Image 1 (tube, helix red, strand yellow):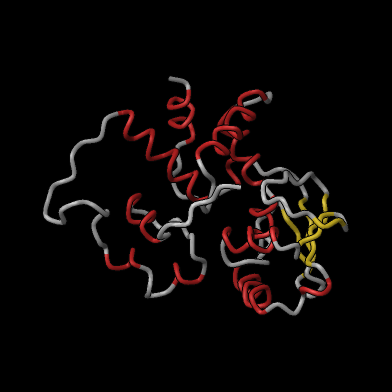
Image 2: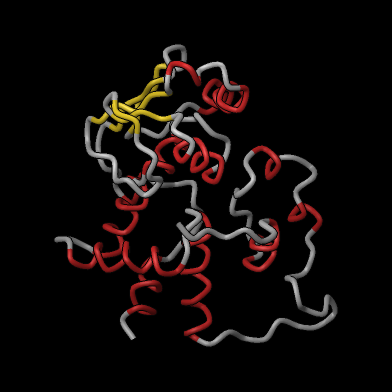
Length: 211
């Protein structure tokens, strides 16, 4: 499975937006975005040029793709699947992205970032309905139970990540029993429920791929 292995904070600087790719570090004073540094490759004194329509659409796609930690080929496959589904393609895309197992593990507070959640899945620490799943892009179905393998419940990374549950809980389409380290995917979310991604304009992504 292809994945990005370069500097992560550079992505946030390119988009000039916190993408929350490094978990707790992004919330700390160590985050480079707190220093308001210019985008990489740009002269800090130069004025930003006006972006074309294509440039604006590309940035929206790149932001969403990077937030969920996907490469271009895989993201395009998800988009094509969203278009084939009944309903609005943009909303379908968000539903599919939220159903990814690595994202659900992150949303359930078993990991502090999606990349960390992906590692937990790949290394066999996560069960779906009692069965070990090691595919991060696995699409979780409604009413599925996601839990931590018994032998992995003492992992420090999971215990540390679960502390966030006490501060902000989980999304409304999920339920979690933090003591048992298991949760449920109650239903596919609506676009209006996904409020933590900022002002992502999915219509621009549709227009970009429709050209």
